[in-house]
Image (cartoon, rainbow, N blue to C red; front, side, top):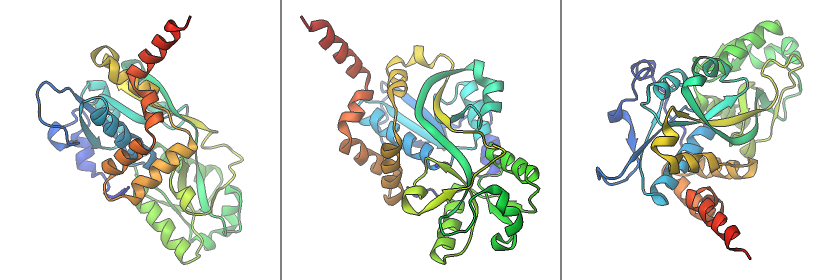
Length: 305
């Protein structure tokens, strides 16, 4: 799915629908040297995207010498900013289901730099102590959950799919909109009180390492099966910044690695600094992503008798 705080205001999202405003982007500490190239990374308010983007920013600064600007916006303006060339890359594109509509609309205007995480999934999630195991059981247990499903950002595609799920399963439930952080806050409050709650959840997310949770079975497969998370870049990015494109293509995390990264960021006071420390603690992995690592490995192979 750090201090994952702050909901992106709709006004900001609309204002950024065509242009990723440079002044609104958080510079990540590089000196203002005109000779230093800037990489602009966009992300949405999902835990895994926040974690991966901050890690990429730390590596680009510390190991590759780039200035990095990051901006958190809603997914729709982020895709249009990529297409317009105002954002360089977005590392949290879920395929083939979650962001299918955006890819159908914009895919031929973007560069797919490949998969950075495999076997991601979305599903309605409850604490392990809740005595149901399937979405179908929600219908007869409306009072247990007060007829509410705690969702995330109203504009998220998965919210639309959840509305469809409510209809397909004939559930008399209200889907509450909010954000990733408000969802986890509601989950924590319920778990602390040992009360039932059902939330719109996804893996990877740090909540699964913090609490004992279960994803409800979805016999109608509304959310689809597992997905892969891709890094998408603006058209021409690989030609403009080939070394950065190579790094983002090499950037891959497994469940344990991303879980520990998200946990470190969630428990840290500053996302970038937490990511920077994680990078140093996992130096060999990070080194394998760098473009010069490929060159070194090739040279070693060529030098063998």
